[in-house]
Image 1 (cartoon, rainbow, N blue to C red):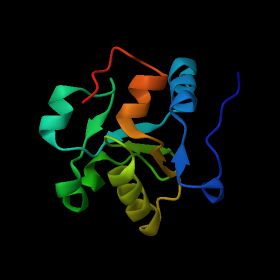
Image 2: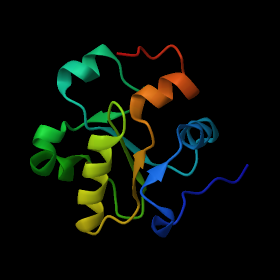
Image 3: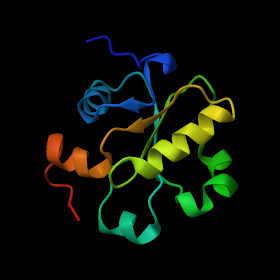
Image 4: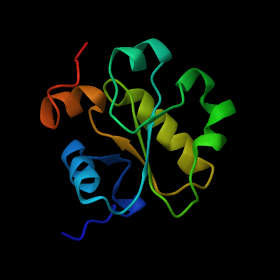
Length: 118
């Protein structure tokens, strides 16, 4: 399978099943960022993510970003905070930034039911 991230012009969101397929394929590489708060992350998270809480996002995101050519996928609980964070990164020039549609809730329902829901 030859997977590739959509063009940024296609929209801000990516589907949980697409991200699952990319993870299973192992390519293309991308950075997964959880923008929920620490207590939410402690309750449940997607394996391999990097936590950058929205409350500290502006101050801490630079340290978590890969090169501009590597896509970034941000998630939260339902997709609202991650859309805000992804929009911020796009406005700063990181065009290959996406929000996981439906957040970790959709991930649990559509991809990995072992991820706790809350």
